[in-house]
Amino acid sequence: MAVGVSANIFLDMLRSLVNLLFYGHFWIAAAALAMTVQTHLLLQGIWHWSALDGFITSGTLTIYALHRLVALRMLGEGHQGRRFEIMKTYRWHIIAYAGIAAVISAYFYWQLPTFLKLSLLVPNLIALGYVLPLLNGRRLRDLPYLKIFLIALAWAWITVIAPAQSAGITIDRSVLMMALERACFIFAITIPFDIRDLFQDQEAAVSTLPGQWGILQAKYIALGSLFLMMILVFLNYWLGIYDLSVFFALIFSALTSGVFIWKATPEKHDYYFTGLLDGTMIIQLLLVLLFINLF
Image (cartoon, rainbow, N blue to C red; front, top):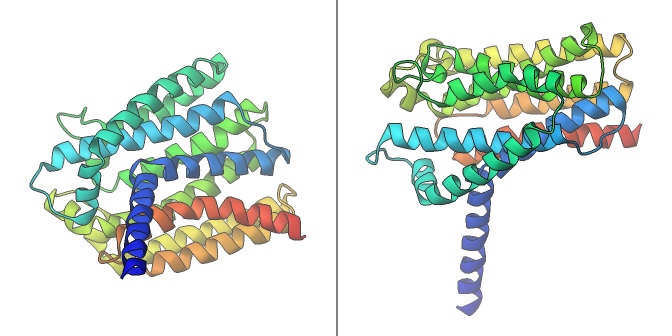
């Protein structure tokens, strides 16, 4: 009996820790950092912590925490669902983390050179418009079909274009192809979140790919986006930007992500989306590091 009680206590503590990691938005912040680190490794072969990394990590935590808080406010107290109950439980945690992360992100932002501050205005404004109901009470994410394109654009800019600029690398066709490759990857792994939110978006009259074309067609679109990503990976390999190890790592990342996307359903636990699908960004960096050391 004592062993069973101890096991239950351990599982409850583990579940609370995982909830804090996911719904405190530390996981998605780590994913943003992973994508940024990967860009530095692919373009320079080396990575050192910088003010940009601090801004991207803390800024991502701020934006996603703010998004959760606004979403909870707009949904109201009567909305049901395990994911929303967990977020309500961690509401004050999220508020605290958002406030602290906002101060940290502002600190790092003002350390950036002026040209980088100006460049980051574009994805920053997209992120704020995505989160805050500035358009007559609507957010950019509430506009038909728009949200996944905005997410892909913002993530590609922040995790590819900005790191390249900070390293003094010319934004040539190879960097732009890497940014497009990243956008295709982010676009693909974002579609399952529309599958997860299918019924919620239908209630809110928000048009999404799964809502209008069906879950199966949405998955085909996501897989098509991953196929385009693989073509861009091959082109960067052909141009000599990637070596063979990076080529295989990114192809393997696309294939495994495709499997995860294919298995996504609205009935899946939110850990599948918030944990595994967001985690594909971290997995991709780990694959790059693994394959670089293997070849």
